[in-house]
Length: 263
Length: 286
Image (cartoon, rainbow over all chains, first blue to last red; front, side, top):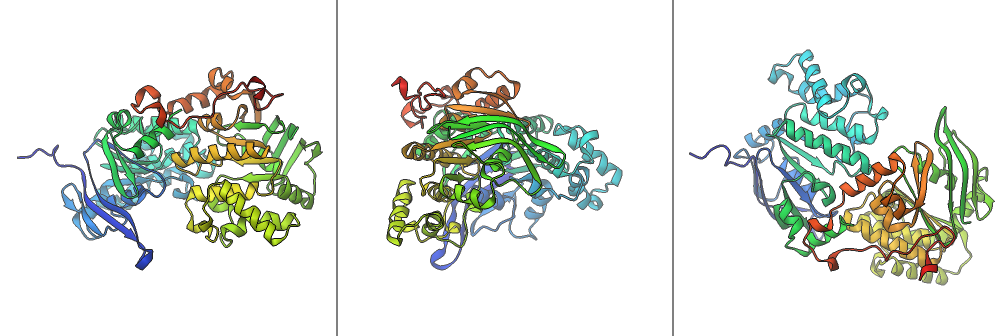
């Protein structure tokens, strides 16, 4: 019998997707395949318009695909009623580019962070006290002092602090899959480093959580990813372990991405 | 002196967002202002452009070729911006007018601030589009039909079409992907040098700064804490904040020894020349 280790957490096979209709129809993704194991960090890398955000949304079941398939823990993610979709949505979380747009400005931190648990409270059998305790724990895990941040509103946070709140909200439900779409690009360089540390400590605390990081910047990706998948105009240009891709890029596009992140 | 800021303070309500900022941009010089988010760098830009938010109070002095800008009325400031100061902002999608075609957008400053015939304007616009590397077939497109990099090229064409004496660029590459970032900075530097304009460049990222400016000021909580040649700041930062920004830029850069690609594939900054405030482009060493 195959061990559970062998089955990928997430599997994409020959995913294609087009937007628009008639003559305006444009392919966003063409026959993209990938797999992700539990605990692994995969970076989806490419320039603007390469299809990386579309791919990440398809992998989360937030966007439909035209052809191909997405399997989450072996179950097909195909429409909102599919078992794969429901498991995926329960067990995944998303961190967006702009924390100020993704956090509710009217809610203090603790309320935003607890929301994913509150939505599932009945199914999980959680009391408000338990939600509060786990939210405080999540705050601590992203390196924000609970006493000082629990009651704070997004407007009173720096960009880096707000993005950590968003990460706390994403990890509070202990997802098996964490997708982060350009989580650093709205932050200044020193806040980027801080957030990288946050992600690394979360990986140490929760080694089973798989992470998909969408980024155009290999300078960020080098510190996080186990593997890199390079997308160019919706196709997989290159894929491999981070060290190999950075040291021996096999395609010209990867080389120009490397050059753009080098001194 | 193209731009001379002396003891600038900007107050929003009870809070001083800029406290004691002083800096100089010489004629034809490219000078950077670097600081983390919230350090007040955008507020300094806004004070220079006469675009401070309502209720903000500024004191001190901002002189543009000797003329005091603080306290200038809106009409005079608008004329100055239109004719002599070009601006490039962070988000080209927001700074371009979505209902103007590329050609109309670039033409607008000429229509508003210069008396030129239609044919002359058309010629200037076509020339400008070519200089920012946009093909003629894009002239009839709207901003929404362009990529982020193309939009920023249009913004640069609009900023430079009046041949201004000073270009103010506030994080012009932050919204772009890494490959496009490099192309846009290199293009901006080339255009500024070609026209003999001065550049006042605002960023949080030393990797970007070292390609654009030979001299830089570091801003921390509304104060200029350190300034000097950019390479000196990079090699021997004195202030803790400068050190932090340099370390962050280093950590987020791929190192040559990590990658197996040959030197030819690297986008290299222009050859280094000794910077000097009195000899802004360092040409004296050639």
